[in-house]
Image 1 (tube, rainbow, N blue to C red):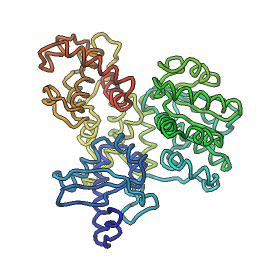
Image 2 (cartoon, one colour):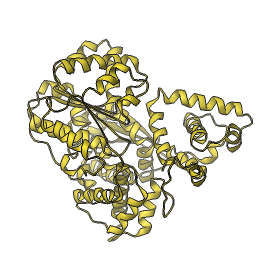
Image 3 (cartoon, rainbow, N blue to C red):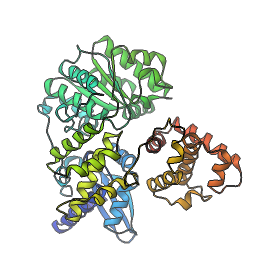
Length: 491
């Protein structure tokens, strides 16, 4: 068994695997958000390299971390391992429970990626029974670095920030429920977890749960499949405040909505705090039951718009202070000019730039370094112009070929494969997504679409578009990918 193999490793073997991990994490950090790396890979690493089969086994502490790593890092983790070790080896993910309690194979990713960590106080005062049952919720999904004092407030989010602070300072009495919404990448998760951090520190005897809606769905589905619904409902009875992130992902899940409706009503009747976030206001939540949307709007609803240029500069400077790093103001200006509507991508660009500096052993960075960094986020022009999608001529300014290349790179396939007749799942999905984008955002006719992809019948295009539209209603991974692509198109 792999556990026995790991126990037999000598100090030299363990040191080699730790050094290999350092190189892989640094490679991965040029492509992925640093906090996600820390959150989902702190208790995961290579536990065995099988040279005969040319296979690398990566162990994760539990199923939850493994499934989220697959979803969040897609192919980038495997590719980083292959790049650093050997591209001829395949990578396989497995559950390795010993990592839950730490291991000599693990290293401090907070220190490696230079992320400042602020530990919450009094966490040990949370009732042990609840902490054990909801371990994943507390220690995997919660990031202690998200706080009010490092959230940059600007004119377009001041109301939501003030309301969130009021809820955190006076839960159960200020605004209940509290519903906040805005587009992806504007700090929604930061503000949600800042509320969590504040409440739990001021009320160590209370049980506060933060859950992405997708995790809530997983829990309800599992409970239904294993006839454990009563056990799940008893868990929520012990919760004093519930934070649900990205509630829009409950769409089309009728049974889950019904159960959440019961949970919501129970919390309301017992005056327990409910905080909900979404990417749109309650009334625009399609395929969510009207009775739920009505309840979401009972309390206070607050929204946020994209930050202006000065605020984007302030956000970048704030992130640098946290990391105890410095970059020339003019280089920050290039990033802020190009990334205008997504705070998360501002931080990704900054992390990529700092990692580039670290790996290349440079004392200073140049404009070319910044542009190379932006290209990893698919900002290809040296002086990117942001277009208004409502402008009738905008589609002619944005080259469809650029979007095709972006999608191909995202799925690690070639443009030639996209235009081939391959029926591999990832190629088919990418191709169908592009056809839908071509139709909706570039106003391409069916004939132009099938000619672009070299197909003989436009009827196939009709089927492909209908098929991907159907999948967008039920497949969260495809929803996530499609949202990333359309955000880029609309810039």
